[in-house]
Structures are given as structure tokens and as C-alpha cells.
Amino acid sequence: MTQDELKKQVAQAALQYLKNVPIIGMGTGSTVTHLINLLGDCDFKRDIEGAVSSSAKTTEHLQSIGIRVIDLNQSGDLDIYVDGADEVTPHKKMLKGGGGALTREKIIAGASKKFVCIVDESKCVDVMGKFPLPVEVLPLSRSFVARQLAKLGGQPELRMNKDTGASYITDNACEILDVHNLSILDPVELEKTINNIPGVITNGLFAIRAADVVLVGKGSEVITY
Ligand SMILES: O=C(CO)[C@H](O)[C@H](O)COP(=O)(O)O
Image (cartoon, rainbow, N blue to C red; front, side, top):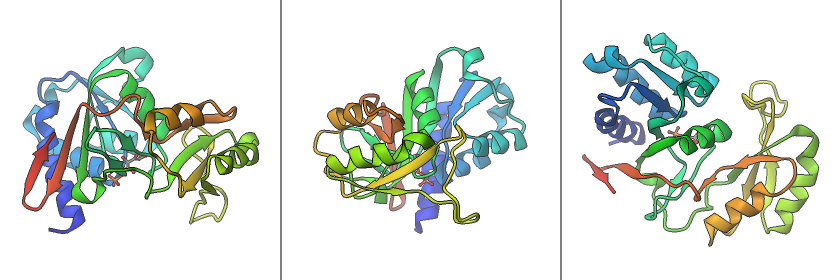
């Protein structure tokens, strides 16, 4: 199976977690895109009152299949949040933000009782850090934060928008530093350390609030742990 077929397969398996859930939390990315497409064809779609969305892209997609998007300030805490990841460990800690939606993803994950992480097998790692760690920053703090990240041993690179040639701007009007070559031996400590740098909105480590369930598309099956 191709990586995209594995993503679709794991998205299919995630559908069962959305049954009988009035308000769902929805992540961002190509695996979630499959999930929303599949949800569009589901009978139980009409039972869903609405969804809390982690990005403008996901909002647009949810609305296109007829699902109402609800503000997190109105929804209260959620039963389920489903999202992909760029890396996930056997302890269900994740590195996320390849799609740039890390801050809203982390907020909704924090407000959800159950985080269901959906990945293809290429995302499973023992130690995170091969994928550059996204750090969302206020634009005015970019250079200062980059120097602090370099002191932690990383090599920060400002994410660019390939279409405009300017820096990539998040849904929160901020920028992203993608940090290469970080040694992530203690993800909980590193998540706190980076979030304590003034100017950092958040970083893509989801170690303090890890996933509760991980579904992995592997070969012709989906493994759950
Ligand atoms: O964190 C994310 C977006 O900010 C995505 O979940 C992550 O990048 C995985 O994306 P994909 O499903 O396209 O592989």
C-alpha cells in the first residue's frame, strides 16, 4: 500500500470513534482530510451537532461536507479529538505541526477527554526529532527565540510560504521556526523548556498531553495501542 492508502485506511478505522459523539474535535493534515471525506459519506454524520476545528483549512473542509463548526468557547470540553502526527512514540507522545496548526491543535487536545492519533506506520519512532520540531513564535521574537533554540542544540529554520516566497504565516498571524537536529531524549522537559522562552506561542511536542489511543496503518491492517 502507498503511504496515502495507509492514511486512508487508518482514517477509516478512526470513524468508529466519532459515532454517538455530539461535538467532535478535528485536527489538520492529509490523514484528517481522508477522515473528513469519509465522514461526509457516513450515515451518522447527521447525528453530529458540530465540530471544533483546528485550522482554517479544516473549517472549510468540514463546512463543505455540511458539518457546523463550533467555537471552542461555546462547545466546552470535548469527548474526542482526532488528529494526525509527524512522529509518535510507543508512549504515545507526539511531534506535530508539520501542517502549521500546532497551537490550535494543542489547545483542542487539551480540552478533549480522549485524543485519538491516526498515523501511517512511517510516523512511528522510538525517539522523536528526526522530523524538525515546529515552534510557533510571535514575529517580533523570531530572532531572539531562534538564538535560544540554537543554545539548546537545535538548528532553527524560518518556515517559508512556497507560493509567496515570504515567511509562512499561521492562522494566528504568527511565524514558525522548524528546529532541526534537536536531541529529544526527555520530551516533557523539552516541551516545557521551549514553551518558557518569551515569544514562543507553543511548540509541536505533545508530550505533556500525549495521545490516549494511537491507530497505525501498517500493511493491510490497523494496529491500535
Ligand atoms: O500536526 C499536524 C498539522 O499541524 C498534522 O497532524 C501532521 O503534520 C501530520 O500530517 P499528515 O496527516 O498530513 O501526515
